[in-house]
Image 1: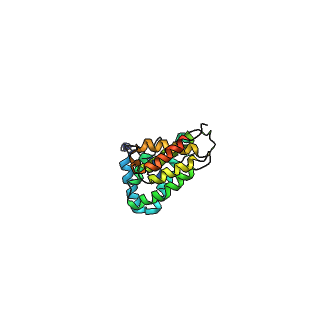
Image 2: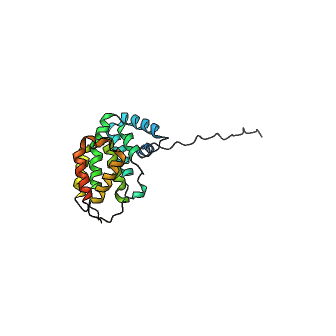
Image 3: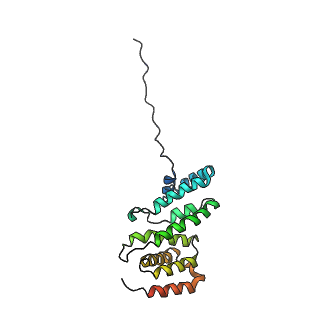
Length: 193
């Protein structure tokens, strides 16, 4: 019988993970893959425009606003910085759409006994938005002052203030001394829980 040629199995290239808006946004938070994720986002935005940006924004929301605080990123800054490095029309969309969603989370009524972890990542995101001037400093101080006066929002206001001072390192407040002093006075008058 004629001899059959031996079939040698060919190596299979490792399958590349599918690139989705969610994987791009997740990679914004990883220093090693951030640049590639940004390139992927820019390329897809050129093709899909505002519709694709909406998918990226939804993925960002799903990550930053997860219901379980322990599943939210430790810091929102790499994600915000990545989104802010996209072409200008998309940065403006971020400014218009992220702040209202965040403020809704921060102004939700919570009992004074709610665990800090419920609000901490939202307060940190607020501070990052102030640092990158997505939220105006004066508006941020006014918002914190307003929330501080409401017992159901007091924890959010205190965490927003402490995170903003920590993240911004005071440099943004140079021209806002009167508003900062007013916020400080209001903080000093907060009753102990």
